[in-house]
Amino acid sequence: MKIDVTHIDSEDTQIHGLPSAVFKDSEIFQQESETILRKGWVSIASAQQLENVGDILPVRMGDASLIAIRSEDQKISVFHNVCRHKAAPIIDKPCRVRTLSCPYHRWAYKLDGSLRSAPKFFGNSDRELTEEEKSDKGLIEVRSVVWWDTIFVNISGDAEPFEDFIKPLDQILEGYDSNDLHRISSTEYESKSNWKLAVDNFLDGYHVPFVHSQAVRLNSVMNQEDLFLSDNIIGLKLPSGASDKPAKTDKPLPTFKHLNKDNIGTQQWFGIFPNTLLFVDPVWVQLIIVRPEAYDFYTETLTIYAANPDTMSPEYDKQRETLSNVLNHVNEQDIELLDKLQITRTSPEADKGILVQAWDQVNVRFHQIWLEKMKQQ
Image 1 (cartoon, one colour):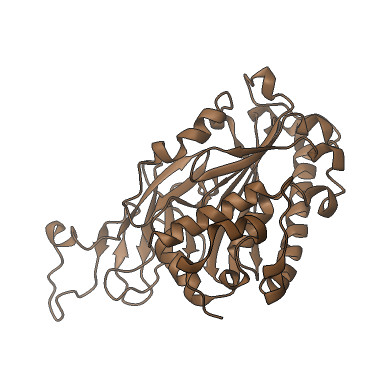
Image 2 (cartoon, rainbow, N blue to C red; image 1 turned 90 degrees about the vertical axis):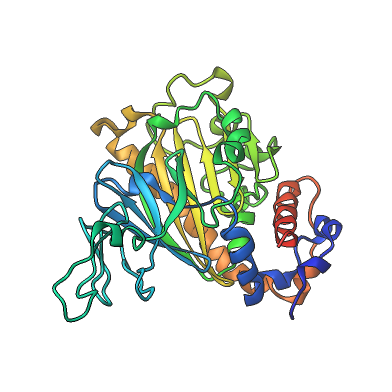
């Protein structure tokens, strides 16, 4: 069934959520790609996935193909993964190189995106391109920034300044030093479900003690607080979540340095619209980056960080491995559920679902944010 988003009733989403059709329509996905994924600030990767000069990571985001590169000056830049000759993809898997070479006609690019060479550009002549002639033939750069080790891009280039976009979350996370984050692991996942279901699931505290009972007790989530920080950032808070839940490791890990005493036991998780999912614990941080590729397929990267550099010492080798295994298992449980949910959530019967006032208000707000953005197209 085709659906016109302008006809979706915002008040109706408070009762039933978004209509089932928006999770299974290829035209809706194309609108999302143009209206949400290109125009807003979206995350694509963890900066620490690019550890060395020349590390390159290709990603898909909606209908855009991108590459993130750590260049000679240690800066991370993002470009369209599109050769300037005939738009061939230049990189198709993570790699480390000093020169990017298009597999089609061997146009070559430096790590800063500038054109290095274009073989026989002038045909049967030995003349090579001058630096001036090369200047307008480099890779197309994408506006980007790194925040909390997360690479954000604004593909259209005309979103609000990132500092303004993220300010409400910066304020609530004051006292957590993101410079101390050290990556423990990054794991890639695929799901045959709609990307909005992944975000909705992350913001659903109600399911946690039932789906992930091995890691969370029911009473641990009974005092959750809803967080509505801005038109783009929402989340949940458990003031004593870390202390109420079963320990993830057999040996306590060091907390964030200089952590405010009010946050010592606090767990908070945030959905940064549209695709960035951040969980902040006193001793670890979890970052999930959801990359929509089709209406029924997305990839994601789950990165787990130590909140304190001391956690990376050999003393905690076993505990780091255990933490990574526990959090990845939780994510695997979610992926398994979401793949099944794609079938039932897109059925007509799903439109008769009843949301719960006590638990689903953050999810309702996520649906409304999506609807507001889509109606702005």
